[in-house]
Image 1: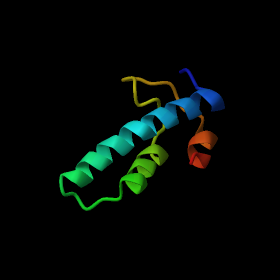
Image 2: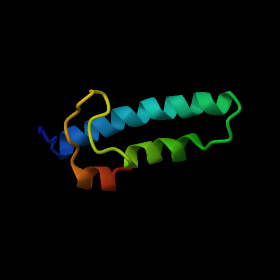
Image 3: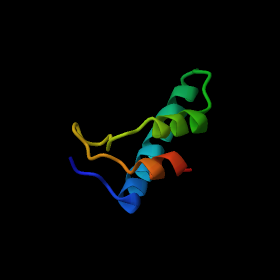
Image 4: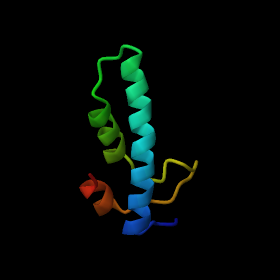
Length: 68
């Protein structure tokens, strides 16, 4: 299985965070009682693989752990 390095992992996480933040901001606008930043960060912390691909490359665990 392919494993992304620190730089590649950070790029994936930054991009995915922006997508998640937009999603959670829309949910808040729809009346959900959520903190968009907190929810987006939680989404990031749960990642193990690149979420943009069905069988995405494994992310660098330390980078995920220390992101943000």
